[in-house]
Length: 312
Image (cartoon, rainbow, N blue to C red; front, side):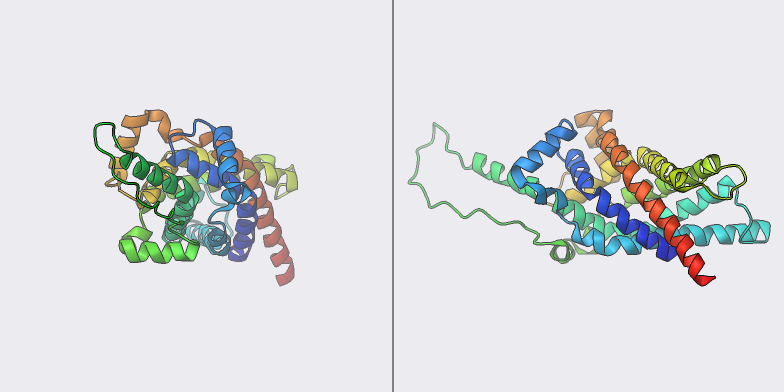
């Protein structure tokens, strides 16, 4: 039941938050954007509304599976821990049990999400990378005043986008960079998801306890909305530094590589842009996380109660 409910909640969440996720990735990977509105205006001017939905089809197809595995793994691990420690899967878990189960949920999802994250980031940043490449070519070919000019050659056609869609992106990355290309940035993703999902489920559980009315076993809809939104904000506050590094490593496969690995990316980014670079997109992440996770947990709890009612 948790697998089904998690899948439904995940699809609802991605439908709400994807445009802001695209803006977040652009801010994290492109130093020219100084803020959220600067990025939104530039994207809309250059790419219109479609630019905010680049790479959406793959997350929509895969998020149900990933969210299902996340919630299902959490509940499965929690029931096993409770059975091992207290003799019953229905026993009330301690906060340590919830934290460990959330940590395990984050670890498991990395193996599923890394290839789709690579494709999503490459598609979301493809336009800006293509523009930068064209600028470098034009500046390199600009004649200097000291050199004699040759007759102008016919202008070469402007190259089209490298990736035509999510599946084409995945196959291209696998062909050009191998299996390692599909899991580029997975070390940062591992650090991001393990700690953030431990925070996610623990904070949701604590907030639900606080918001449950006296004499009831569960919070009402308003309580679930508030607990889910706050849990999402806290999780992304923990996740943002590694999310920045993950996005940079995954976008780095386009053109000449800048980063040799996780540590080199952290050191280079901080040296060039200061420690604040690790918190690029934090405000946007938190603003996106609140409504997205409100929807995720309300859909999850509603689906869980509905399926339990059918089974009874």
